Image (cartoon, rainbow, N blue to C red; front, side):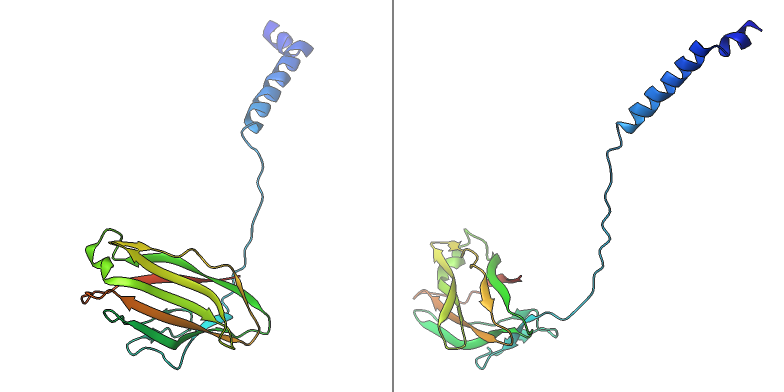
Length: 188
């Protein structure tokens, strides 16, 4: 009976209430807050695409959706080989879009003796009247590649196609060797 009377007192109820409040406060200190993101992703056609140029190299491949291309370029010892119109960058949209070139990778990696077979591999973006808008030049120093910095964003007008002009140069004593480059065309 004394226990029942002791449990019914206001002070015991108050102590239990304080203990529960402390437990709730401790638990809620570990919960900060949450925000939600509910993305909706729609597959659409790309607005900036590649188009084979009039000088599209034999052995090159243009992807079915025109968002990737594999160019089979050549370089000759002690000579400059020019591809005047191997590839075009085309804006198929009614709005202007910005794009840039950005280096991803090159193989063979730096320190490989065969890299010295190349002098340069230069990509130039030309507008519709043939004026250079940006240059993206790979060169070598000994057995190492000097890779280009990304270009600034270029504004490609609506329904316009610009040329990606390419020049290759190999050293006078160059042997049969292949360089594989991956370049990103970033579109804003």
